[in-house]
Image (cartoon, rainbow, N blue to C red; front, side, top):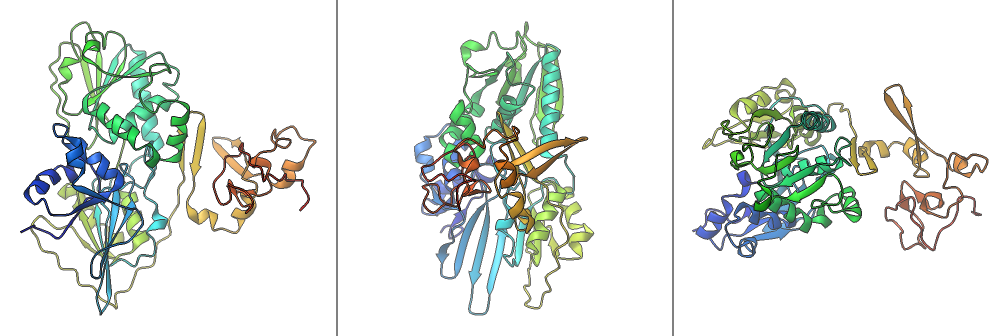
Length: 485
């Protein structure tokens, strides 16, 4: 007799997914569901098994599309950041008396990272949730902005290389390893540097899996991949190379960077006639290292978060405003810190149950939903190659002033002290032929087409109608800004 009617998996990381193969073997008829990307990444948890046989037991579900599993029971998956394919799971159960809604976040991350877009709050607002089961991996701790974390790590690696030191980054096979590799490829400290980045073991296998998922990665990453290989590249500096057995005798004799498995024996790298070595360990991930090496080594830690911090966690809760909040997936001390927050205790029924403890969740029709607290919205800045993308919250585009700001899709940027000030360019400015500040006024392209607003085509006669366009693009339906209306 199966222990459940079906299983929904949030993402492919081992702490959430590794037991699925044993579960499937014990109950082969038990349905297991996940996102399409998760179904493709799952086999990396069992590299000693045939991946084709493994992938068969996880059925792919579409994103943002309700699926009815039983009468009255519907599930819907929403991208949650953290890892390609990671999802939050909304369960809706409808009876004759009322409808109940529960959201399980899985592991989530509100910020954009190099290879994954963050969870979009606007997709989940207004759900009228009864219960929210949410992870609390970082408790109430507050992190620097993601870009600051990346810069601090890149600066430390850069200093090590300048001091003629090689760097080893042990990492799990999926997620963090690929994020690190993209950071090293695209950060200004390393672009163009004559240095080798070696990728070993399961981390390399994870990179290969990501390449198969390119259509599911953010548009900025897909654009990057059109101009140069996403990972393996021995022509563009820094060179990214798969570490083979024949390379080991020479790796580390001159400064280099090695990405390897979190379970790897680092001693095989830190040999005589190599190094010195800097071993950088990610915070909040339990990686054991043997500090007895033949070559001199230094062990330090760094933060490159893949989960939301305390303010991010409370921000999600306040946007969803459930009756009950249940914290899971974190150390008992961290979860206790979250449940004791006054801002949560005063608004919600907050729970942090221990294992094997039954939690009753009374749902009352008279429960007063708390008013949403004021929230500061922050944008995200992503830099890949020569392209910089600034992502802003939807609340900005609903402001009446946005139409005027984004009318032409072009902006002017200028420094004001240490701050960068942006302003939208009007059609009148673009039509000013006496100014040589704007070089596109005499070019037939989407940037000077009167049907382009907010980098989207609004001309029904165009094959690009209602699609996002690049400003240097062009179609046969082009009409210039100074053409007759």
